[in-house]
Length: 405
Image (cartoon, rainbow, N blue to C red; front, side, top):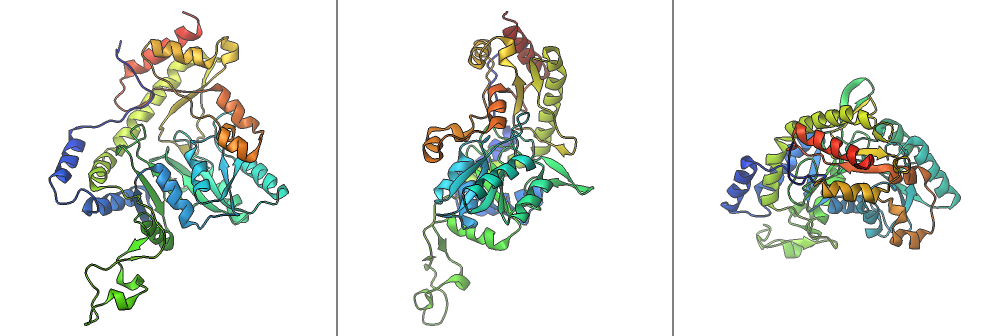
């Protein structure tokens, strides 16, 4: 039996990754160099998008997406409440407001029905909804064709929060599967490279889009609103020398921007990790399959989340639904006793509408699907370096805890 503490998630770094970073450390550029464009190009090709913009983290990606869409004061954006708080915070960063949507109680995902409910509530409250954030939770994807069709009907710009779903696919009209991040249904898609995600850069993010104007806006915003492009200069007198050539030192700040750049060191790590993505996904799927089979012995108290056969998730999380009432013990007790057995677990997530900041801003909101999912969910360890025996160890320990052993 495997020993040692098993966290719910962990990065996988090998000698290729270390060598890629070391090569940059020996080069002329630690930031602002060629690795940034190389990572962006490789990422765009991998997901099938025209453009990819690297940035400092997944929250920065969501913020840049909100800026690029022009959201601001007086606007509202629909956000499913079952997500990390950054999805909603990014809307607030630009001064817009959040209309929380409910989710499917059995998988935590936004649905056509819960989106329709949120739109109806917004209409009753005379709110001007301009955008929708779609969250792929744990790697499982929202039914994008149906949800995006509804968004188009209401003229909503769609941000795809794909921070959990790099490598996930879903069917599209009977042709080749759509890839999360190819933006065939959305204006923008955002990704995170935090250590527990499918690939890691330590901290890091990416936004993909097929819209050249959105791409240009995000590149401007991530670098202080500063441009060195001669065609974009507004003050030609200051920009040009006596011969009409651009002064080599000249740049313009045309709006207030941010420093959301991702350095070459981390982009090199990202490129190296991206090359291993298929291997990471295959291992995660194999481990999930072992969990699915082993957890049958704990039914009906413990239930794996079902996958839609039309979608093929690259799981970032392995979350299960546990009937803690039927088990006769609290979730905290289960988590504590598993930790005592060196097994880490986590809850993804506390519904964002329950957080004090949002309760104070919008009052009490009733979202029963999210409350049901939240009350039962628990994320078990899942990462590529886990062994088959680690899965057996987790399931055996969970069974013992639930049986009071």
